[in-house]
Every structure is written in C-alpha cells, then in structure tokens.
Length: 294
Image (tube, rainbow, N blue to C red; front, side, top):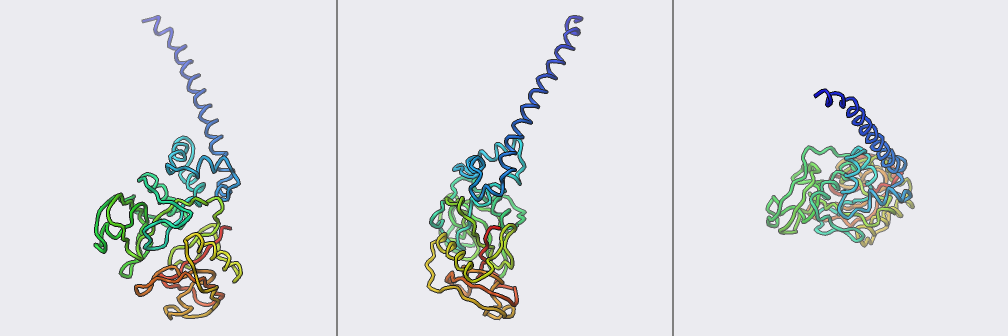
C-alpha cells in the first residue's frame, strides 16, 4: 500500500503531462482548422481560398467533413458561412433541380443544406427536418411535397410557409406549385454571385444587394435565367411609382427583380423588371429580387 501511495505523485505528474500534450495538440488543430476558415470564410464562396473550398464546400456527402471539423473546433456559424453559395432553391413547384445543380439524396445532407438556406435568407425556423414518403397529387399532405430535399418557402391559402426543411424519400412527385422549393446542390458555386431573394421580399439577404441600373439588372437576370434554365422573351422592363396592390408597378419591388412566381393559378414569365422609385410592397408570390454578392 505504501508503495502504491509513493507512486501517486509520479502517476499524477504523468497524467498532467499527457493532458498538457493533448491540450496543446487540440489547440494546434483548432488554430489550423479555424485559420483556414476564419481567414477566408467570405472569400471561400468566391473560390479564392482553395483549402476552404476543398474542406468545406465540395462535399458529395453533404457537410460530413465540415461537421467533423466543426465538432472539434468550429462553431456552426463558421461552417455555414463557408457554404453559403453551395446550395440554391429551384423555382416554386419544380419537381427537379435546374441545370448546373443536382438533387440532395441523404437526410443528413438535406438537414445541413436546409440550415444553409435558412441562414442565407435570414429565416428562423422552429421545426427540425421532416422526413416522409408517399402521398398522392393534391392530397394536401406528402403528395404536395417534391421528392428529395425541399423547404416550405412559398404561400398557400393566403399564408406563408414556415421555411421548414422536408426530405421525401419516395412516392409521387407532383409538388404544390407555390409552396415548396427544392434545395439543390450548386455545382458551379465557385462562380456564383447572384441569387434570388424570397418571393415577396422587399430587400436582398445580408451580404447582397440589388443591381442599381438597368444594364447590371439585365446581366444579373441573365445569370438567373441561365441558372434556372429559363428562356425569356421580354427584355428588362423599367418603371416606377405605383401603389400597393394596384396590379401594376405597385406589385413590383424596388430594384431588380424577375417575375418568377405565380398569380391566379398561372406562372410568371421570368421577365426582368427594374423599378427606379415608388412604393415597395411587392406581390407576395409573384416577384423575386435579383441580388448580387457585395
């Protein structure tokens, strides 16, 4: 017993040394991991921080590696900031992702992608991811939800969706035309600097702004048309003024937008609009602001 007691100081010292070494190693890993992301989180989306891009964006499994590093030494905010351009929303009611993107096929990837979309559009969502299958067209249940990963970002019966993330594994694929949007992995995210604000929004998400003139509006809108596979016959429509709910320019947000939503059962034609002045109370389900990264 005395012999064991005599050994205790040496054991205690060895344990402290091991803990100190482990702590030093953890701090070193933390510094390395945080340095690669914190130093260029914003630039990562623009494709100028190769290390960040490789670790945090180009992940087929959907954030698995990002989350692993996050669990060790990053906050979820950092993880999300490094991936803001990795996902886009398909048009309302679409049952497939647009060209240049691909669908998300795993629940975990869907949950992570939904979190990025919520962050990008400034949405606070009270529900976690909902997983389901089956349903029939127009059944007001899972038949309304597209196959794959989506968010309830639109409108139905006069009310907005809550932006909750949904993952549908099998069944019908005839989603409600104005309530759900597929979340799609953006294959060209390193060149992406133009996004659409939510339907009915009066301002662009944080870190972006709407083009300030007709020419830049036309260029940004063309990027959106190409990204979503839209062929548009009208050029940039320029106007001003209007009153709320006047079924004219009062329905259109200030700045640059596209007519991408629905009204009275029919889809918009995606024509670009540039409103120079006047009211800013756009139709809640017809126009989306075109926003360019700052």
